[in-house]
Image (cartoon, rainbow, N blue to C red; front, side, top):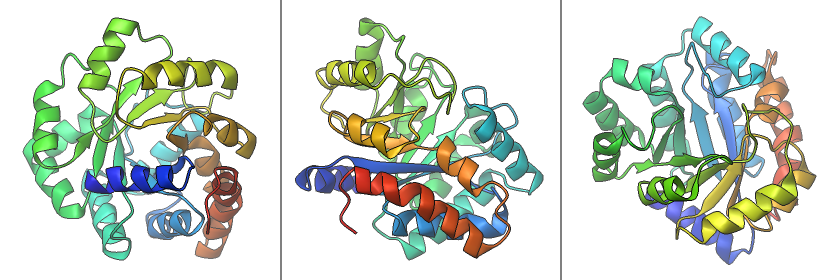
Length: 268
């Protein structure tokens, strides 16, 4: 959890937003997962989000759904995701790692076992898309006791009262969903998102990151004027889809993420 705070603090001192990059573990293959993560860091990603593949990723669009299905076909599971996080941490001791996914794989793995293994693997935060704030108190407390941030989502349709409840339950950062819909839907209204983020920041002292519809440097640069972090997922997942070699995968990551990092003012 400290790595998240330190990263946002450093980006704030550099007068820029953090670039948060999402990829699904096991996609496009198990063998290419670590090279993709490594190249994400080399291309300017400040915070890594590793997707835990799930058979019913209801909040995700077709790009990430296909990646999740492929990852499962490739044999990726929760144990494998945590192993990836541990291997990544050994190479990148200071880069924050957030696991993003759904509640079912965690429960099937075992809550206490998950927390212990995630701690040993150097995981900094967990974002569970389908766990409502009203039902997750015990799990959030257990995560925080283990110094793992429970990261919470705020949707464009979330009412004022519930926003207060959500941000009060969060740690690490608050993730603002920039579109009314699934990931990568492409209906991003930058002006509206900027206004909503400004309102959200009035309710919390935590950093606010924006995601779900960001795909271009222009969008990222505009959102970075108000957000503390910009999350890019579907664009990267689509770029690496079908990569068969490490050279191809790294090139796809670099071509997608470096322009976004440049748009946020990242000094390489």
